[in-house]
Image (cartoon, rainbow, N blue to C red; front, side, top):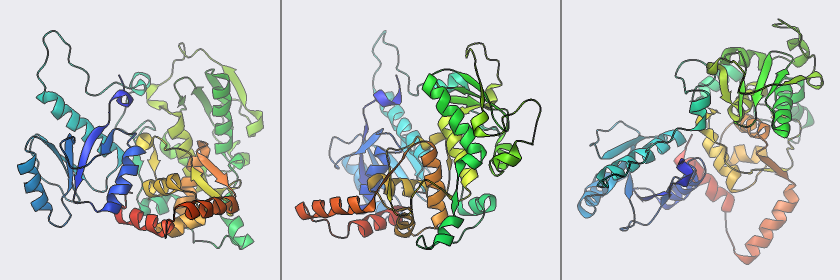
Length: 398
């Protein structure tokens, strides 16, 4: 059984205004993969989440304990709080993984209250995913580690600082564009696409290091740590081809040498195994350095097709807010930064990573505007964009 087969946990929320609650619904639906849903504060709720930083939070907590003494509580706060064995503490800012852990803990508490039936085995409370069979999760510095969050200072230290641009000025627009084909990113994307299209495990000689792709389980193997990958991603492919040579190497993305392999017979260090999607996402961030791919238009609006599984990804500043905005409605990349009140380079880096996973959809702004006009004629929605912007800024999920 996997998490996806379990019915959503029914949550009541207290201490959240309407705007915050709406965005939290989007968060549960997207990054949290529908593992929980918000319901009315009635008897149908299995647990209650209380924002302990809200006004009258203590009063809300006391009232909840009196009216629903058996309901499991999730206490949300910026500061650490003591909690009882049947109370779950969740620290702000909320991330998908911590929210999923809280949901799992609530399920364990609820399950522990149910009497066991004689002779019936107790169901698993946390399934073993396929990734644990292929490459066990590690807490060291290997590239198979769980999701890491870059704050703004770390982002700028690794990727530099870029001033916002006026996209209508050609020189400024050109300064923030890059072509993935000029870097290692293009070679690796081609290698992964080739393996996926044939559904065959492949060893690919890239301009840098050999890459082994296992499309059936969406994993890749490469003998490199994160620091090596970050450095290699920053070098143009023509220069990279002359580095780290210990055997024949392709000189360009078109010269990839591909060899089918038997996945069952491959003897590889499991600590170097990583999710294919997490690898492409991370590689695009290191390559873009806050720039945007050449095939993303500044004039067209972009939308996120669906939520990526961010629990194992490298998260740049404001990842959740950018994803929520573009998943909800399309905007040009510069409009997205303006609405969220953040630097353009964060949006550009996010777009680069999502584009590497084929998650970005572009559409002419004129068509979108016309559709919105028609929709507003049928059902007026005044100040829709600014309203969403205020919601996102209020919660600050990332």
